[in-house]
Length: 204
Image (cartoon, rainbow, N blue to C red; front, side):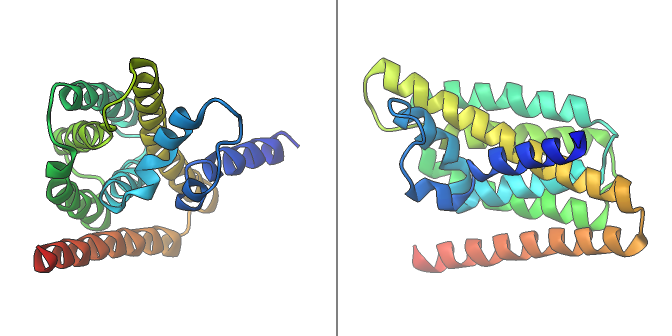
């Protein structure tokens, strides 16, 4: 029973950060700015691909360096948000996030048990750039704080739920084909990021 309740809670809360949710109104009146920030990482394909790649990498390398990596993502995410508020342009992050999506998903597919230092560097870069990319348009201080708070939580939630689902699946099944399938999915994320980068280059 407890396992079912926990699974239901995870699915329900994860649904709040899906791209489909970005088209809906905030579930509670008065938190529109927070809600917009919460779903923003899932509605921007460079951020989504980078965070999914990182989530796969953390999930496949579980439990090695998971806690330091997650804390690093949070710390550099806050640093990125501060940098964005100091004037960094969110648009500048798009190519770098696509490159990081390829790197993180590629590491998950090819060498998920690689060096912890590389894992932390990639995590720091993703967190920092997603933080910069979360910079909202100019507005009242309260609205800006609410939106940035939502973006920060949405970023961490996407990484956490992706990595937690992958690590739980691996622990429960312990089948070689599951590991292979997850690494193939990681490779697909990397391939999609490459295609998106190519489309962005040809469109510019």
